[in-house]
Image 1: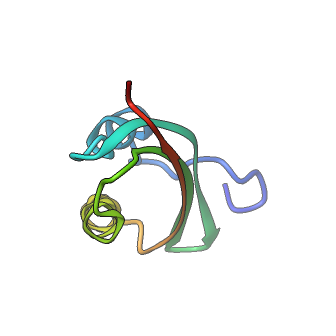
Image 2 (image 1 turned 60 degrees about the vertical axis):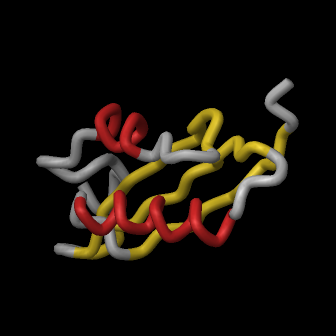
Length: 84
């Protein structure tokens, strides 16, 4: 799975995507989770974040979601949007 860059066994990508919808996050897209080396899961994700949200708080919650799911390195790309 390292060379194929696919989600490691036991990682439920749709569930994680849903968990990432913390307050302030409008939508989650381009979520990729893979095993970089044996035992080290990493992720990248784009988040549509409501303009005016406290992104530091959002990021803290997003990192908690990843850590709970055994992903300890992540890149988060915020895209600030007006929810109107």
